[in-house]
Length: 95
Image (cartoon, rainbow, N blue to C red; front, side, top):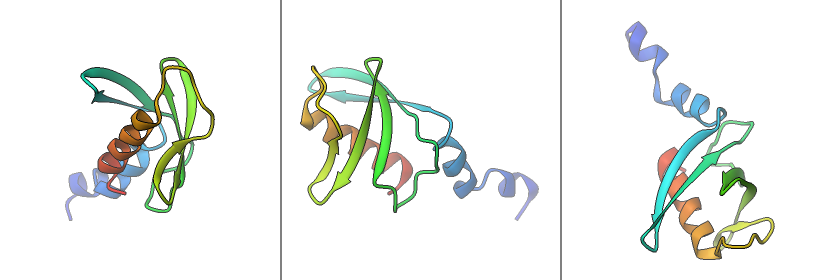
């Protein structure tokens, strides 16, 4: 494996992006939402809690048996939107 490939390996990028506040975007019900993943630990398949910032508010996504839920109810943020954000994070980080 070359120096370039070693430095930019998928696992290393995954760990680095997972800890630096990665901005993401999702379109839900024809509305664009920007949110930022602000976890302090790398996101792995074992991750069950992911803090995000959306609309200037911090929300903690929690994975349960039915999918993703938020730790607290926030006005203007539907549970379906929380599910969609959780799925987008799963796709991005290949969970």
